[in-house]
Image (cartoon, rainbow, N blue to C red; front, side, top):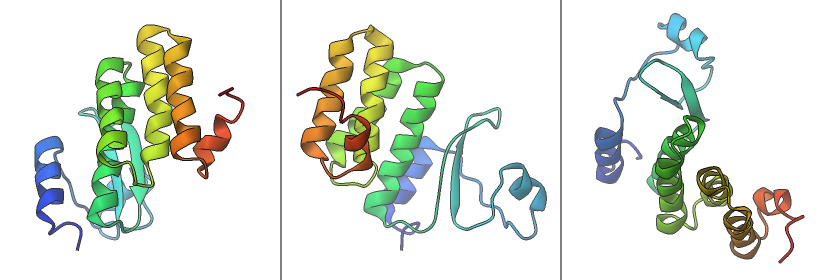
Length: 147
């Protein structure tokens, strides 16, 4: 259902070099990356450093935002704040109803702060979580922020 979807295939082809392994017969890689359940998707850089992972089935409308978030989170950890902000904002803007959107909004605020050192940018991004995603765990994480 997910992989045959043209949007998913196109997104993966454009942004990733996919590798599929059988965790039962490829125990070396499965062990190295602590993979015990399928599907598990791991976003790695060219050196094999892991930056993000998720496991289990997701429909295309949740799968693509997770991949986009993973790229944004990798950019954030690599301190490429401009790219991180753009990728994370895309998740929020294009997939606002996805389960990953509140977390993307949280880390978008962090990337904006890291890029500009503007506390206002951070707090404004976090206020948006309280407004747009009030029932999320991410709203609880920013509940100390004054409106």
